[in-house]
Image (cartoon, rainbow over all chains, first blue to last red; front, side, top):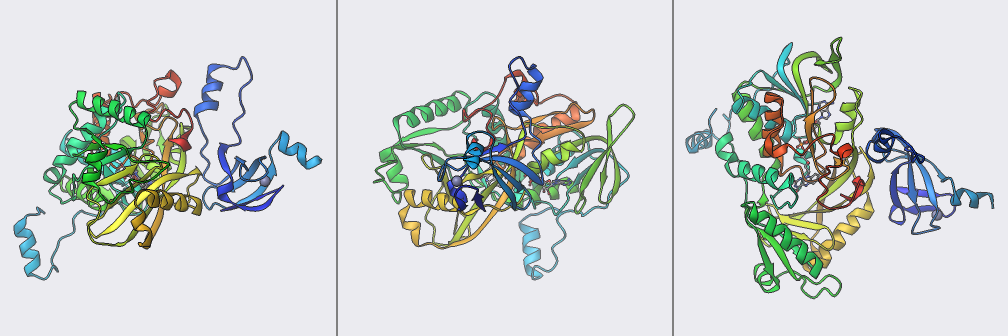
Length: 91
Length: 417
Ligand SMILES: Cc1cc2nc3c(=O)[nH]c(=O)nc-3n(C[C@H](O)[C@H](O)[C@H](O)COP(=O)(O)OP(=O)(O)OC[C@H]3O[C@@H](n4cnc5c(N)ncnc54)[C@H](O)[C@@H]3O)c2cc1C
Ligand SMILES: [Zn+2]
C-alpha cells in the first residue's frame, strides 16, 4: 500500500500513522452518556469503502482523510483533513 | 472410528489406503437445537463441549469455507496461560488444563507440545512488571519462573546478549506453555464432535437471521437455504462485526490484519517459544524445522487477509536484533489473518441484546490458546443461559459499565492491543 499525499506525492506506508474511522464525531459538551459510549467504543467496522484519518508523520506532518477499501486495500481518494492541512491547500 | 496403535498399524500395513474420513461432511437438516456460525477452533470446540459435556447433540456448525480456513489455520500456534488480570488469569488456565488432556478427550493427536514460553525483559521496569505477573500466576496456582540473565544465557545461548539498546536482562518463563498443531486441533474437534452426532456443514455461509414477531432469532439464512435453530452462537473471529450487523448490532470491535512468517527448514535450534519484549517479535520452531514467527498487527482496518511491507520489515528487524544469526535464513512463506480487535484487547462471550443470539468474539491475536476454554465456556452459556464462572467478566456491556479487562493498559485503541 502506498498513499499519495496531496502535499508530498506518493509515499510508502511506513511514513504514515493510522488513526481510524473518520466518521465518528466527538460529542459536544453536555452530550448524553450513550453518545459518548458510542463515540469511544462502537464502530461500524466497514467491510468495503471507508473514510479514515491518517497522519503523514514521516513527511509534511499533515492530517489526511483517506478513502480506502478495507477488502482490497485500494485507495480511491486522499484529501487534506479539515483544519491545518486543509488551510495549507488554500495557501 | 477410534484411533489407536492398532488402527495405525492396520492402516500402515494396507499402504495407508484405507483410512476412513475423520468427520462426516453433513448436509443441513431443517432445524437444530443449537446452530454455531463459524467452523474455526472455537466453533468446533463449542459444538464438542455442547455434545460431550452438556448432552446437547442436535447441533450444527456452519462454515462458509472449509473448517479451519480462518484464523484457526493461520496462527502461530502459541499456547500459554501467563495472564495477570482478574478475568483472564483463571480463564486461560482453564484453557491450558483442557489443552493438557485434549488428545485423550478427543482421541486425536493435536501435537500439544509444552516446550515452554519465555517472555524476555530488557529493563528494570519490565522485570518488575513480569515479576508481578508471575506472582499473580503463582498465587492462582499457575506455574511461572522469573529467570535472571545467567539462566537465560544457559537456556538460549544463541540470543544476542550484546544489544546496546535493548539488552536482555532475563525473562518470565512458563514451562507448561508451548505450541499445538493448529490444523489438527480443528480436525480433532470435528472428529470427536461428529462422532457424537454434531453436523459439520462446510461451504455454508450465513447470510442473515430468521426472527419471529418478537425479534427473537429462530434460525439463520444461509447459502444452502434456511436452517431453524433454538439458539444461535456466533464464533466467526475476524467477521464478528459483519455477521452481527445482520442482526442490527454494532460491536466494540475493529477488524485488523496480523501477518505470520515461516522460514525454510533448519536443524533444531530454538527449544521453546521466545518473545522479544522490546520489539514485539515472537518465534518458535516447527517440528518440520521452519522458524515460525510474527510481531505487530499492520495497524489499520482490514478484511483483506494479507498484510503490507512495513510490518514485514519491522518483524524481521526484531528477529535480527534478537538472533542476528538467522539473517542468512530465507523466508519461505508469509500470510495474513483478520482478527477481531476489541476495544480493551480482551474477548467477549455473552448473550447479545437480541434474544436467541449469543456472541463469542474479540479474541484479538491471542485466541488460539483460548480454543478449548472458549469452547467450554461458550457451550456452558448456550446450554445454561448463564456465564461460566471463569468467563463471567467477558461481558459485552463492560465497555459501558467501565469494567474493562485491559491487560496491556492501552485504552480504547484497538490497533494498540
Ligand atoms: C497470523 C496470526 C497469528 C496468530 N497467532 C496466535 C498465537 O500464536 N496464539 C494464539 O493464542 N492466538 C493466535 N492468533 C489468534 C487466533 O488465531 C484467533 O484468535 C483464533 O483462531 C480465533 O478463533 P477461531 O479459531 O474460531 O477463528 P476462525 O478460525 O477464524 O473461525 C471463524 C470461522 O468463521 C467463518 N465465518 C465467518 N463468517 C461466516 C459466515 N457468515 N458464515 C459461516 N461461516 C463464517 C470463517 O470462515 C472462519 O472459518 C493468531 C492469529 C493470526 C491471524
Ligand atoms: Zn505529506
